[in-house]
Image (tube, rainbow, N blue to C red):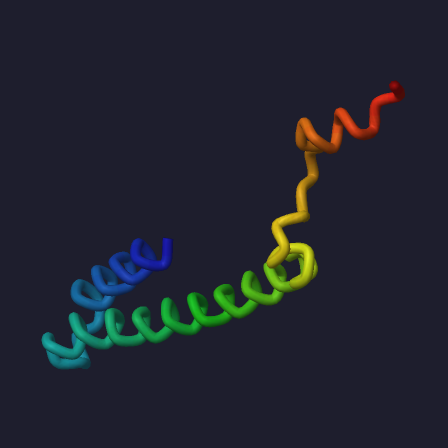
Length: 82
């Protein structure tokens, strides 16, 4: 969506802004838009990394392979009354 915004701003600048040289009308919106895309990507990458760390299983359970939300057949059989 930011790419579409960059395209729209570039088209507006090329058609309507006559006080700026033609090369700048094409380059400046793309340059500024690239910076905005980089900033948003970095911010959301950090946000999702924090959320993933917050919702990940404990390190001991994940490394031992004992972490499971569904019972395995062995666990199910051992929990059934005999």
